[in-house]
Amino acid sequence: MRSWLGNNPLHHPLFGPVLLVAMILAVYYPALFSGIHPVDDPGIFSLYSVSPPLSKVLLPGSSYYYRPFVELSFLLDNLLWGMEPRTMHLESILVHCANTLLIYVLARKLSFSEGVTAVPLLTAALFAMHPLPVEAVSWIAGRTDLLLTFFVLFSLFFWLRWIAAPNWKDMLPALILFTAALLTKETGFAFAPVILLLAVVQPGSATKRQRSSVVVAMLLPVVTLLIISLVFKRGSSGLSRFLSLTDISCWQAFCDGLTATGFYAKKLFFPFPLNFAIYDVQPLYALPGIALFPLLWWAIKKDRIAGVFFVSAALCAMPAVLIAFKQIAWTSFAERYLYLPLAFFLLGISITVSKVWVYRKKYFFFAAVVVTLFFASVTFQRNILWADKLAFFQDVVAKSPRFGSVYYSLGGLLFKNGDIAKADEAFATAEQLNTRESMRYPIKAAIMGVMLAKDQYLGVKIYFNQLFRLKSDAPADFLELLYKADSKRLEQLSDKDKSMLAADLIETLALLNTKKPDPFWLYQSGRYALMADDTARATDFFQRAYRQAPVDAHYRGAAQKQLDRLHQNK
Image (tube, rainbow, N blue to C red; front, side, top):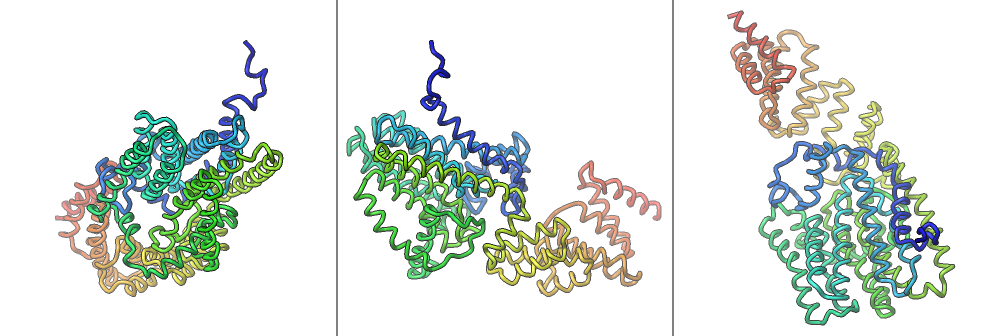
């Protein structure tokens, strides 16, 4: 028997998949060193590193979004490898590999020319190397779009198989995978009309009655989750707000929708400039947004199957258009939202090109290879930039100079690197430009942190009092900053002033302990009670600290020594 090595390796069934995976690993390996991104990633690590109960992950009612499959993946990350960042980045790269292979398989299945293997391979290579997916792959928090696309494409694979030859072995996985997509990210609802469109136009042996009945079954998870979103409004508030259109002007929504549509359409054709924090876009993008609809109609009239995939790309981008004026996410626009639409867009191109490949294959091949190599170079550079957080946010600030939140992130990195003066400037700019209520307190807390680092202890207290009429109104982070500043001031005061400030510190720590319980606050309160000559309260604080402190806590033994000293003095 002749070995496959004696044949043309291009014809071997593993050549395409191996080449695609190798390309992705070569271009995306810098993402392994991206670490934890300042935006969203720290919250993911702090939440799932303590292994929240399974009920909190699986049941609605405990978080802004209802995304149990994504939450389960983070929970498993903690259980299996302690949320090690490199491993989590490798997971994202591997999911991108899986999605690319699904594109390859689907493109081969949808090809209209027998024996054409180059078109599916080039289609998948373009998806693999396209710079738009970098945000979803290199950012741990971007996992939602990766997993959503995996479940949607896998469901699409079985759905197309069922249409071609109806049987429950294909229908059931299609239904299960679609449900998984809905439980991964609420934007999976956009795949529902795609299912309906394909049931209408995709050729196959399934009869009209069979298609109608199975479409109804496929849409049952959509109805179920819509009911859940209405019943558990608090737990699926992201979806509830996403579905609600009562708090916006219809005309403004229409104009903003056209602008966002045109912007995302342009991004699919020409993704540059690449930017993590796209704050706003030019209203002139409404023009290509208007032009898109007749173009889609023309595409369907020209080629029904390819046209449906172009329409599917537009449908999968519609949630991103809604987000643009609903402001559910921290940015109005994002490149990661195009991860799934890009897959359908390239499949539409693949169908179109496969029909005329034999007549223009040299030109198509050359153009596809050149574009793929160019995209690979850009994607590689983009991954390197993602690994350098300071350079990354300097790039973002340069491209979005009016977006306050990115100055906050830049300031945090500068502060961490010890560049206090530049961090102070960045936080001041963030406060000046900020328009998001959710960022108001984090920015002000950062400004207080800079003042503390610059030894402006009295300035911290004055700034705190300007922010909060009552000390009890302050969040825990602000109380902790006030405590640190006052404890530093305490070292500079006379005995009488020390006694007064110590009493004030006890009040601060009491409030802090109610909002952020920690036996260490009790131990510190005991120390300040001694400074205020209140031995009774000091004894109580030290006793409570000793009882509540972890066995290995460094202050537990100190609390016992203080108690022994107080008992001896009696």
